[in-house]
Length: 73
Figure 1 (cartoon, rainbow, N blue to C red):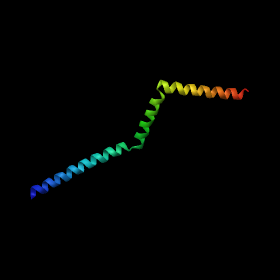
Figure 2: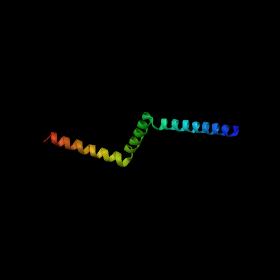
Figure 3: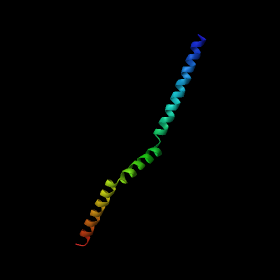
Figure 4: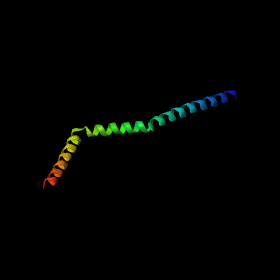
């Protein structure tokens, strides 16, 4: 009987340790600053792709051109 009690106590302690690890991992994953930083890095990486970068530059040039045409007509 004592052996069963010891085994149960070890199982409970192991479950507590696993739960603590899971909670720590969730706290890291749910950190708003980390999520914002990761999102910022993803957006910047996407914007630095040549296809996206030059498309945005072209669109900006068209807008500036249209504004200038509208102003000087």
